[in-house]
Length: 95
Image: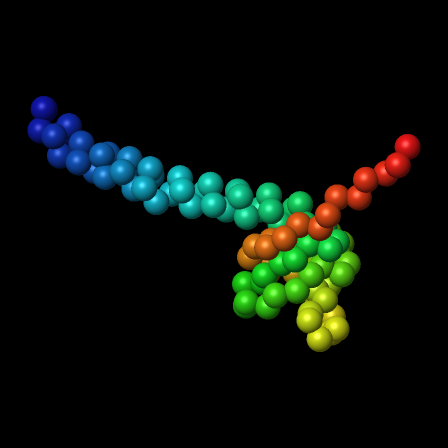
């Protein structure tokens, strides 16, 4: 009877180790990427998954238009954005 716990305990420990070393960090990274992609705004300097650098010219719920250095405009899905290199300056309103 006691042998059943002894054989299943290593499997449980292995699952716990995998959870904390692999699964949980991946979930955190995915959450950070999702937050970054939802907070994109016009004027942000971005890098796409393919390595294209540019700034956001226009944006809607699923697509963005990236303005490249040569003046061309390319349309991408929001999910293709890997990182924001520089945020657009905040506009301050004078009261």
